[in-house]
Image: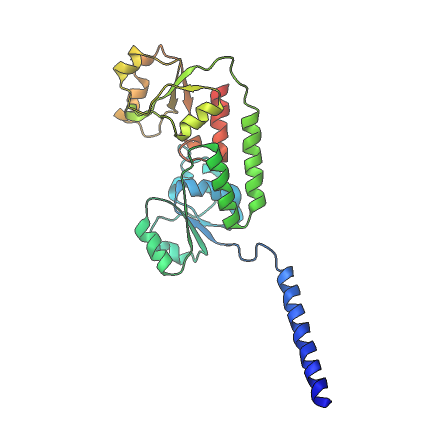
Length: 267
């Protein structure tokens, strides 16, 4: 009888302990395992990190502060910067490193050997890709609601863009005569603005452009680092072609802010 009571008492204690453990697990916030010190080594991940979780930034790449390239340049000024080498990143003691699919691969491999989680981010080429990548990063950072808010703002901006009465032929002309053809982010921006891409993705020289001009020529805003490659975009021979300048910071990386590029072109 005493043994049976002891067993019953022991079983009751085990059940109570299990119940307490279950209750404790339920009380743990969903973001408990989310990273708190995040380092970004890529311009595109710099911008998304600052927009999604500025309170988690341990360091950004130096490019984040360049207003010619970065949509978040002014905000990035208040964060430390770090170059894509393993040693300085390790000294920051991050619990997550964000990087692009290309570049700094040796440093990323070394960080992973030290047990640092690395998340490599893709390069979306349309707004559906922006939505997917924003949700993926927001989930990894433990701020899914912030990701949904950014996507909602982007979609509202896209929905508010007025549709033109006709679709002008537009050429996105970049340094050295490169153009943005089908399947590129610029092509998606043109489509969102109700414009028709006149490029098949091939390079277009000055003579070809002047001989068969588009209805509208889109060029990047003047660069802070002029060169022969960018001088081509402002050749006097193109003066008769209507043009619109587009800030590279809106289209170098795909993000919720890219909807502003479409809105600018639609004006």
